[in-house]
Structures are given as C-alpha cells and as structure tokens.
Length: 395
Ligand SMILES: [Zn+2]
Image 1 (cartoon, rainbow, N blue to C red):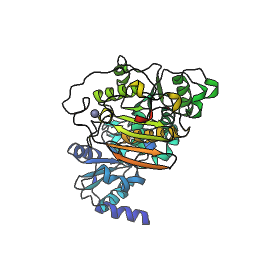
Image 2: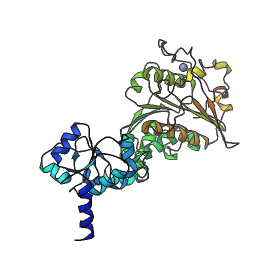
Image 3: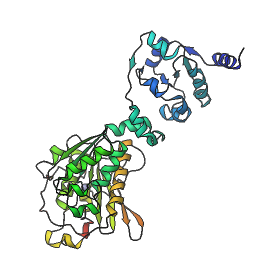
C-alpha cells in the first residue's frame, strides 16, 4: 500500500463521511457547508449557501467564518479526497463535529442538488487587485464589496482629485462627481486628475477621463452642477458614502445637512495653506454616536468676516495628503474594518510634519442631528470666500 493511500485510509477512519444529499439535509438543519475548492472551480458553480474558503486559507479564515466551534461543519472539495485532509485540519482547530462530503462537488452536481454561481472577480480583477486579495481584511469578499460601493465626491478639486484617483484604483465600483467648474491652469498645481491640455474643459469630464483611463472597469457618474437646496437630495439619492472635498461654506453646510437627513456618512476634509483636517461626520454610525459638522460650527461666519480668497493659498501637495486620508476612511467604511474617524478630528500640520487628534462630541442641542430633532430644512448660504477660521479654502 502506498503511503498516500495509507494516510487516506487513516483519515477515513476518523473523519465521518456524508453523501451530498445527507450534507444538504444537515445544511438545512444548521450545519455549515464549506467549499474548499479553488476560485476557478467555484466560479463555475458551488452548493447554494455554502461558505467558500479556499483550501490554502482554510485554517486562517474558518474561525472568522464560523466562530462557534460546536457548529457542525461539512467540508467539500471536487471529489472527496482533499476535503478529508481539510476536515482533519479543521478538526485540529477544535471543531467538534466535522464531516467530509463523499464524492465532493462532482457528485453534488450529478445528484442535481442546488447550485449557485457565486459572485466572483474576473481574471482581470484578480490580477488588478492582487495586493488586496492577499490581505484577509480585504480578500475577494472585500474586493467585491468595494465593487458594489457607490461613493459620491463633492468637488473634483484639490481633495476630490487624489481621493477619486485612489478610490478608482482600489476598485470602488461607482464613483459620482459633483462639480460645476472648468479646469483652470492654476488648478494643476494640485488637482492631479486634470491636465494642461484640458484647461477650459469641465472638471467632471476631465476627472472622468483620467479615472476611466486608470480603471476602465468602474462606473463614473458626473454631475456638472453646483449643489443647491433644490438639487441636493436628488443628487445624493442612492449613494452609500459622500466624500466632501468642497472649498466653500454653502456647499459644506448643504452636504452636512443632507447627509444627516439621509443618514449617509460624510467623509469630510478641508485644507488651508499648510494645514488640513479630516473627520467622518456620521451621527448614525452604529458603533458610537459622533457629531455632525453643525455640532462644531452651527452656522457659517458672516461673509464680511471671511478673508478674501487671494489671502489664502495652499501648498500643492497638502490636498494630496488630506484627500488620500479621506479615501482611506471611505475604504474602511466600505469594508467595515478598523476604527473610522467618527467623533475624532485628525489635524495635519505639514510644516511641522505633525498629526494631532481631537475628540469631537456631538452637541446635544444640535438643530440638525440631535436625537428627536425635526429637520429644520436646508439653507442656501451666500457664496463667499472661505477663511482660516473654519479651516476651509483651497480645494
Ligand atoms: Zn449635529
């Protein structure tokens, strides 16, 4: 007897085997069926409702997928051999009731048991996102989540450009961009989606062209308009996350108010000269209650107190840092990993190369986000140049 045959014999003695029909019945009673075949095998079909954990990652991922070790597990491969070895490994992790499905998926299909085609990345997607797929915190499931995500960017300026660029690269499936401006040569010092030969063309069009050049598999929707109280809800409808890269107070307050009303996380960034700040305003965040923008600044300053735009200016690289931090927050929210900047404000000082963090408390009397408050309506503030008091300007 060959050594491999002997080993198989030993395994068969300790690992109970069940037929596909028995497996289906036990699955319906609460057992978890784990399909350990390779992604290309699974792509052609897999038992309905099965967990798909590729053999090579089984020990690493099964405890996250099935935390309760008393849950009965049914391990399946293509023919019923690999699953015996896999079942033995899983048993060693402490699962008490582990069986192998005899005949594997081939027999499952022959017996005409329920099969589904699981959502999967294309071969091109596998190659493009290879570095994401290596990390269990993202993996194929996370990458598919990113592909389903819809993120609306307010402004294709200093903050929106780097944020959109990285979100497109990361595979966020639908990006929306709101901007009514055209490309000006003075934008090119920092607004990296635009190019010199597109001066005078609408920013949303230029942004779309660059983003699709980087990643043709995503969808970019453009809104060549300025946000107003009239159009804000229509434009915000259906988006998962809003990334605020606006450079003016009227827009910033509209974004805040609409996000609070529609319960959309508002990933906020602002820059001024050598400084920037990032936060996530989302009073509805399930983990902890955070403030909205109005909890910090209930009303914009009167126009006559704001210094003129000419006094402001911004270091070209700075929005790259801040916009990229906003993109990081978006990805975390989509993947539901890490600790978002809800109730926290991250301040960046480029000259000192220093990050500082401030805790932000929700204002219990906030007219917009306090619990039980009735939405007071949108306000169209007069457009004026932003000043340092609120850390605005420069996008
Ligand atoms: Zn508030």
